[in-house]
Image (cartoon, rainbow, N blue to C red):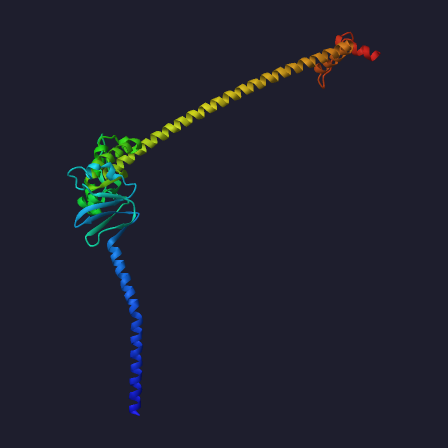
Length: 342
């Protein structure tokens, strides 16, 4: 029994070994293909490099810069030929390639250093500055800069933090010099004057930093504040100015109100006078018409008119309990008696 089990065990082990040999023979081509692909990848990666849309590159061979790869819209090398090809320039006889994408290089002896081509922010600390009339303000400066020539930048600055320290020693003093020549009113309220001064500062700074491969895009006053000791007095002066303006506005409003009231009263008086005049004219015309009608009526029967006037006179002269004694020949009585006899 034990011999049969040993025989079966040996038979199973032999079949397992045979299966493992066949599997290893089947995997060998796959391993060779994978190794070949890996070798190709290593060779291709050592012979090529890529530059992204927001990148630029410095290509060196054995520590000597041979090429720089720039964006197509980067004109720094063209605008500053003295930094590239003039006798004694640091980058004399190097080639400039414009564009992005895949590039070839010599493997193992070529080194590629990539730099960011986007704009970097620079923000200064809040520091005091005086205007022409010695008014003091605390300002914070904001600027944007970029690496315009990565080769010069790698030689002079090497890193963004070092470049920020370098700019900090240039940007703030340049802006302060221009603010010192401006009045406080121009500095605070006249944006055209301030922007013109900052534009001049950008031009001057770009002339100073071009040897470092840096280009400053723009500079702005990020924040302006008053010294703590002057805040209360400034608030009080602002309140006094606002009170003066409010008083002037109220005076102008009162003057406009009085003019409007006087004009309205004058117009009302004119309207009333014209209305009274028109009413008197109409009344006179009515009285005249009534007199004409009365006259026409009286002329039609003068005797009756005389009799009617006598009655009106008697009515006006005799009260309720009065007694009037007249002679029968009295004008006020004779007509009535005559009418009664008839």
